[in-house]
Length: 145
Image (cartoon, rainbow, N blue to C red):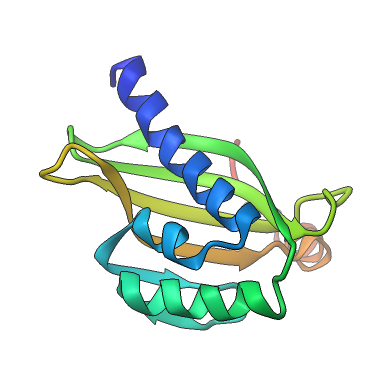
């Protein structure tokens, strides 16, 4: 992968965060493909750009009003020239939490217009205590890395 493509992929995530931080559901939605799938950590499934943009516009007006998105990239991989998967740790709140409590997977595709957009998103709450108990009870289940 060329550095410029990695930079462009990460710029997509930066635009997502900037739209979130402004509470702009329409701009947030523009970073997704028209047929994107979006799964929240509570299990809500949005289907398509319009659905997730409208849902987030409502959320930004109430439950997520004035929140900021905090993200750290864990891994970025490309699969061919038009697909990338980015795993992040992240969270949202009025201020940066001491510990980022969610793990996200973004699948991005390069559109015919030359823009990277998110085609699929999955957000999972990281349950550290349950993870530690699982690894203690069954050490072979712990990741190798």
